[in-house]
Image (cartoon, rainbow over all chains, first blue to last red; front, side):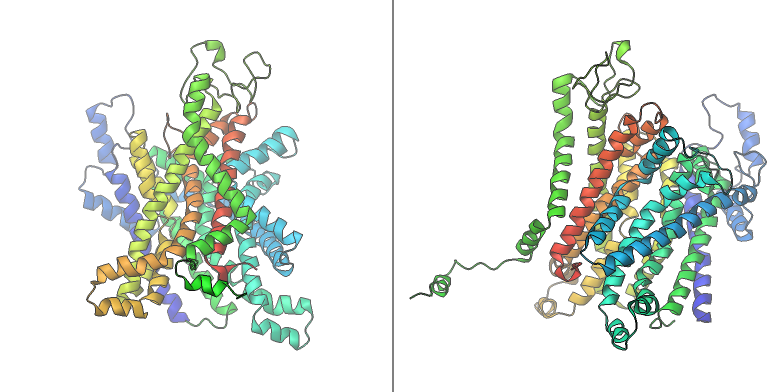
Length: 305
Length: 317
């Protein structure tokens, strides 16, 4: 177990560097620079800018600097938000995205597991069909359509909720979280239903019933544990998808999270900030995936490392 | 004799076995949701192909036609004429430049469906090749290749696609489409590779492969002629479900402004335009958004239906 975790952690390091190198390469190969603009800049100014940001050095020196920065966990100074260290931006944006993502995931987990389990217990009933149809709607409606429609309904027609802005942990979060959670709710409900259907027919559940446990005991102690394994293994990729989802949701609701900064950084060619966010999120996702795998071993006694 | 059936069968051509595909088709037809999905998808495809010329012919509107008369350059609600009365001229209304939204939604449909289809094909080519190679070669190479797939699953690949499109995009609308096909295909092949590998591994030790090898068929030919065709069922099912997910990714990129470039439009970019005016002209978001949602919904049902039809063991029942 310990060796497994250690080995996975060691693999994580080169992976992060591959991602960082790829991102850096893409930025460097692309035409144009961060200081390009409509109005021509005097050659002397360009020379000064290039010298200041080390762009006059050979590419391997610059690349080495990026890698060294990533290794130290200090991504330098943003090119766009003048004078602001990238790390500072990361730490102010992280709470926004983390709150959003965590609440959305918890909501999706709660609604998805409950409705999926009920659908599986009452297979082929009206409840089953309607919750699975709702899940299909959740998968099919893009979040950038769902979000604005919620705004239209709750903010612009009913005047119940504020349409945008970040005010910490407040009612402002209701619509963004709902928008972000919809797809995962749907996925988790489908996975739970499929997993539970399989487990409910398995021998060990039959044994549990046969020895006289009540339906509730069978469900809580035996069936859920096996039936939720697909949901657990979905949690790893889900974080990667959540990162993508927050990009859109932060944009719709004008929230100052990592996703919003990431898009702006790309449009501004803010190299240190792009690389900082990519590296940071890659590490986060890889570590989270490792945690999911470890948790798998605890929940499923058949898994051995 | 009363029993005539065996006699008729004995006469040769009368008995026909049902192939896997006929069987699947029969089962698919029984699934009402999947058939409805098939019809809606068919309708959307036909409308996006035939719709724009019909609109141009009847009203003179194309996706980028801006009226000469400046009084018409404004947003009009669906089914409303310039004077505010009922009119069929713009079934989905107009955008701020007076362009017909239906014509734009249909063009968006062309682009969105095309991206969905071509990117899925790209992902199939990569996924099938990779999976078949890993499965057939086996051993440590297989371990390594699948390890790489596991690793790629966990990476925030959409971030790299965003970087790619933001850095290299925006040169020309056509070049942007090519970039979209390739980058979306390149991030959607992982599951296909896993499916094909699994199938190839379970098939490669069967007698027909042994027979092929014994008659001196080359490894490449065994894979392409004997193994890959036998994996097609699950691959097609997965591909049907990849199309909506790729369309969603494209819409997501276009929504962020780094996908399809003007003057072309996709459902995602139309929705992004619509959001600007959501408070005053909600139809500009609702029309493309709902069209897209209905199409994805139908594609998903069709894919689920196909899976149940082609793989009876996987059926929910």
